[in-house]
Image 1 (cartoon, rainbow over the protein chains, first blue to last red):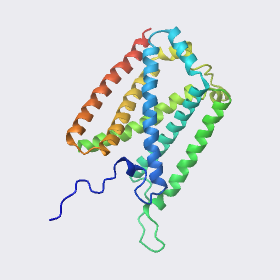
Image 2 (cartoon, chains in turn red, orange):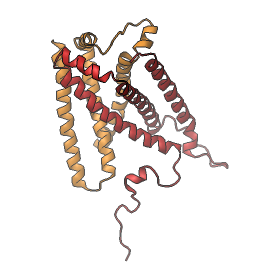
Image 3 (cartoon, rainbow over the protein chains, first blue to last red):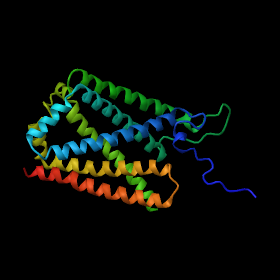
Image 4 (cartoon, chains in turn cyan, blue):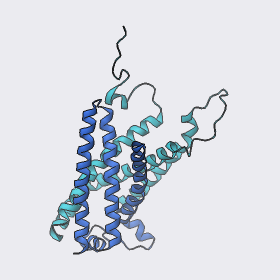
Length: 147
Length: 120
């Protein structure tokens, strides 16, 4: 008698990276997850800084800001800003798709077939373009010393 | 049905964060570009600028709302990631309860500071 295998097709965390011929959207989703976890880690540090250090008064706050003005921390802040831009833009794209706003009209399956991912790809490319432009705006402000 | 509602709240919180955190990022990090458009945001992370914002109800409300949305969105998202690699119902229950507890404590502490600074 055939045994039922519990979660037989389950690949674990490794399946997030590779489970066959993933397309661009799957890697955008993986990056969405990675940036989300990164922003969460930064959020914990940021919450600590803006509560424990801020409530202790001006001297502690200014000492904290002096430490954070280190170029490496500034570069880290830039990466977090770009991660936020990416996570927000890709998240809005995913929400629009999940709610059915960018699915397009159904079409008959006439060769050459156009699958759902290819139909939505212009939106994906537009989203990547928006991210690149916003990352450039932040980089411009970063390089002229606005941070 | 309640799981669907929680998921929609997760989506709504994501949109709200994009708006509120967008305001926060532009105000605090794009001061050079804001200056180009005539908005004076000199040294936005300095003590005087920070305490000036903290004494305004609008900013305190914005940050408390942002904190609530961020905590919900982040903890719900992290819970989803963790639950993908576990099969145990008991683990799911424990993780859910721990995250609810952590979220409530972080919200109480994180919103106490803006309220305390509001009256300073």
